[in-house]
Amino acid sequence: MTSKAANKFSGTWQSEASVVEYSFSINGDPIVVTGIDTSDGEELCIENVSFDGSVLRFTSICPSTTFALRHVCRSVLGDEIEHEYTRIENWHRKHDHAT
Image 1 (cartoon, rainbow, N blue to C red):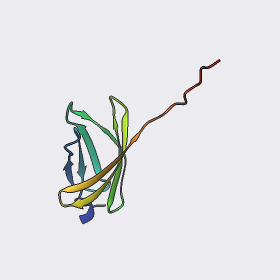
Image 2: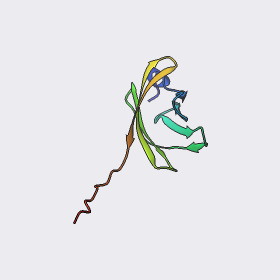
Image 3: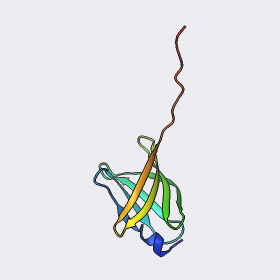
């Protein structure tokens, strides 16, 4: 879905609060998302990429830590996007060891 709306996301994005950069390539359908940890060069695994015309969604996984995030990106202004993310964790039931 190459459109003017999709082109607002094209490029590499960074935040001063993070060492991770995400790049969005809008050369066709689907949109290609890549992520890299700039502190050590580790490439992130990207899954479940979707774009509905205004919101870009994807999941990133850091291979070395299995740290996973769900991302939601919205265009705000020319060179700015809103980036919302949710950490995904597996929790385990704590067993009571009382006798």
